[in-house]
Amino acid sequence: MTDVITPAFQPLDIETLAAAEGRVVVLAPDEGSMDKGARRVNRLTKGALERLLGSDGFGKLKAGEAMSLAWPVGMAAEAVDVVKIEKRLTPELARKVGATIGAKLNGKAVTVIAGSHRNLDQLALGAMLRAYAFVAHKTGEAGEVKDSALTLLTTQPDQWTPTVAGIKALADGVFLTRDLVNEPSNVLTTTEFAKRAEGLKELGVEVEVLEEADLEKLGMRALLAVGQGSESPSKVVVMQWKGGKDGDAPVALIGKGVCFDSGGISIKPAGGMEDMTMDMGGAGTVTGVMKALAGRKAAANVVGLIGLVENMPDGKAQRPGDIVTTMKGDTVEVINTDAEGRMVLCDVLWYAQERFSPVAMVDLATLTGACVIALGHENAGVFSNDDDFCRDFLKAAETEEEGAWRLPLSPAYDKALESAKADFKHVGGRPAGATTAAQFLQRFVKDGVPWIHLDIAGVADVKSPTALAPKGATGWGVRALNRLIADNYEG
Ligand code: BES
Ligand code: ZN
Ligand code: ZN
Image (cartoon, rainbow, N blue to C red):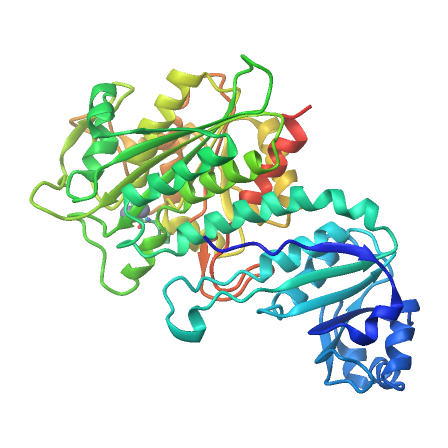
């Protein structure tokens, strides 16, 4: 497990700046004016800071970007990083400044002269999230976990110190999601994933693991069919956080956990197949959200359910043309064994409703390449049967700056799922591929249950750094879902 840095908010004592080791960060408004802390650094460095602020280079920086004074005279620090800000530090800018700082943390001590600025919790969170690195499988120096320290010098340490537990819980959740998504599939088998989910028991989450025999009894034939060509046993993990009122129906979070998606008998081309280690991203996000909620003792009842399978070609694997019966009782004609995610989700969605009668339901899945084509890596696809619930989610995602874009659902697309032999088939061809997948899932949502389907195929794992993450797993959705719960289902 990659560890989160715990930030410390301390009183702004300018006398300590000369002796601060590692890096010292100055926040400078775009007109280059200096606050008390900056003036102290300027005096110590014999005017070097003032010269930097007056330089062309600093003038051209955008808010959130930084320039550095290396090995400044008069200070113990190895560098002073000067981050350009605007007069007011909005939550968005604070996170961006934090990310600039976090990207340079790398085993260092960093002291931020934060003065009386607002949104310092978001600044710290930005730094914590951007400082993530997945080094579990590197040997030698690259694999060493270095201790970093983040100190924010502020005029109001008493205001910010109580926020540490909450942001740390959130960052812990995001890191768990990223670790799960980054793990290769020979390490993160279905069994290993279930074991890591069981780790949440330490935080008071009730965790149950349903094994193949249990799933068989429940009639989850669609899910089991996906996993039947794999040596790794299929499982459903149920994680209950009971922080709300006794007896209040929970919010249900459901995740696609395909620990490796080879495509099965409809095997994928070799190029890029290695990326399908991340096909458990939906389940990874659900598990990370449960950790964040439990870590901050959220006052809500939330249940996370993840379907863990591996999609492999084998003598026992399912075939195109097979007809399977879902837990709901509908028969489905399997057209392409690579469209396995929806076959896993349909049974877990049904089980979630039969057992928990949730007040609302969100499923997350790296479901379709079509969604990546539509929205790229900037936005997840959002599908919903309930405008109010959808609006609440989109607002939470916008506040957290996690890209999310609503795409249509409509009975008009159902024609694509007609089957000659079974009740319906599970794929509808290339047109509107993300929507027809969502239409399929909607058949397993009971009338009156507010539901959102998030297609995170494009955002769960990316090839270049994003605002708050290095390249690789992003942890997309943990912050938005944590906020959705906090703003709508607590208190
Ligand atoms: N896991 C993939 C979708 C995916 C694609 C995730 C790219 C992340 C990045 C999914 O199981 C899949 O293979 N979907 C097929 C469905 C098709 C056969 C109808 C697809 O999108 O091509
Ligand atoms: Zn697939
Ligand atoms: Zn898949």
